[in-house]
Length: 243
Image (tube, rainbow, N blue to C red):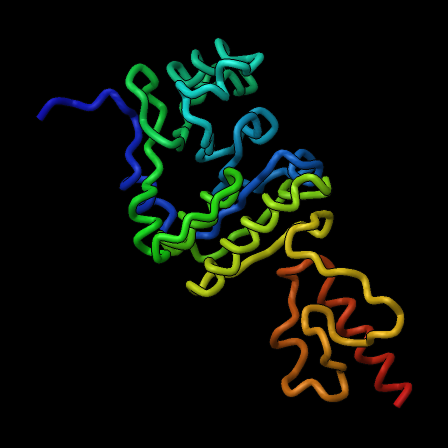
């Protein structure tokens, strides 16, 4: 069999991360401030490789030869990196990191084809991908990553509502598949609106007040959503005192 020019395969990557904990580091502020621990499995988005050199995978979901790259200011630099590796190591050397994209492109040996057909087959052919993060989470759900932590997936900009919606949809599908989630407290991802001073429900459970909540709060409210557990616990204690 003729050897492949590509240095990584999607099957090998799936085997590596199935059942593991993975940290997704986006390019928002909380991601740029995050420092992975030694041995942490890390996936990054696009240029996130430059501030998170520990990355195990880079996701670049714009077609390598598509129009988005024609307008990219660093196109030539990226084309070189997709061939020869990323010059990110402290000693100036290059690191070869698999780059998952829409397809593996001849001449770019670090590229790996995203398994879109299998992802869609797993999730009833439902196409709802407005940005790269959604593809990452859907793949994580399909290969049964045990736990996803999100840093830098902040969505503070109002014009990214649709992207946030698709990301949260796929996080829901991931949770339904049995995964666990943690979100950086500085992110808007999976965040909840502030109560208006009239409603006194438990965060994440509109309409339910602590005194009539049918199960222990600590079983269902945790650190998956920013600050939720502390708020709910404090609120519960305060309302019980008032009753």
